[in-house]
Length: 112
Length: 114
Image 1 (cartoon, rainbow over the protein chains, first blue to last red):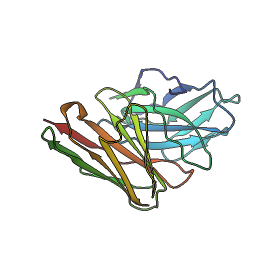
Image 2 (cartoon, rainbow over the protein chains, first blue to last red):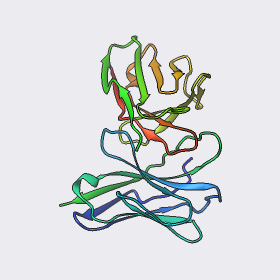
Image 3 (cartoon, rainbow over the protein chains, first blue to last red):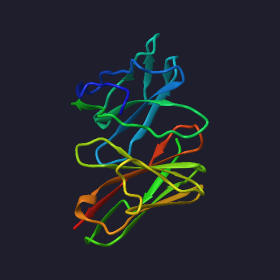
């Protein structure tokens, strides 16, 4: 079962920041927080991941609370092309490979 | 990011036939590949883990004799749906990673069984 909870859906006005929350209260010390998104009828796209520090890349920023029990993905200037289902996933990074377990995600609708 | 391709992107077949789906990592060697399927309005469900040179590990409820997985090289894994039936119609997606690195997903293959 997925170890995260996310709102089912969110709306965001085009050009505004989209803030997508995720709760992962049972996260363990060696688990990272990953964010992927899936645009309709496409494979999931990697966005960003982090352990405990905030992270930023060309797509988004990831803010992780100090206790690591929740995080927020920020799309600074949402566009219509950002409409997708966003998945927050916790995954242990070990010497072997572990699969990503997907929950239901948040359906983000960016509105013109 | 790394590139993973799938072929074909969509396929329509008759009930009872077999369909092979290829997953390739184009710019890196993937020690492990994963196969997922996704039914309409649902999330991705893991079917199996494929390690190069060894037998795949299937999730509970996934028939290994129906969904044959071959991971013959570090850049190619194939999923063969044998004796396909309409209930096998789904969106099949693979992912690949180097070792403990980020997983990258293919674009998916939409299978429709008539």
